[in-house]
Length: 223
Image (cartoon, rainbow, N blue to C red):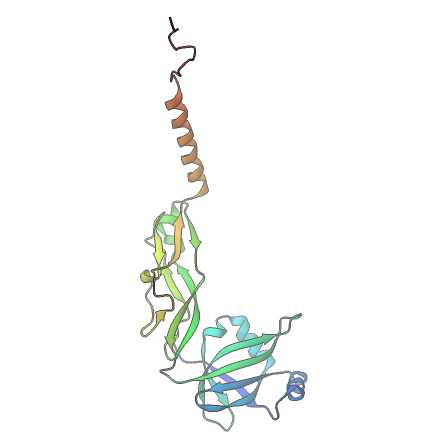
């Protein structure tokens, strides 16, 4: 994670329960709770438009935020859950987890491909076949990557990208440790596959021409 940790503003929610949550939504707010960090859970409200914009920006669930609540010390948090309306798909509740710098957590980090325009294999008509769009990593709270970068520049048709080929942030590791799993590969174009298949058929037909079969027209008559 590069750059300054973004601020995330919230206010203390007076009261708990369904009644207070409904009132918050009527006021254009999204109710939520902050928990963890060896402190009691705290009920909060977040402006709907602020949360909606953050969700639309992407990577919200893997971003470390600096939570600012008036009258309280700032605290680092990460979102662990966003409950949505089943019909409108709009946020209705948010859960935030307090973190320390050295807290280790499991997160799904998206995979990002770069240099597609200069890729050797793609220039030859190959296609990137993605096996994993995201990878679960155990990371420290102060070093959460926005994405895992796969550089396609020098990859040719038939090349395979494993997790060991990706540079992971310091202090992080994949949750799957028993194998060097595949992230993506560059496959040959379907037109090339079809041509290869036709060549194989043609070779088979040529090899079969002129062959004599036992008991056929070219077989010698039995005396």
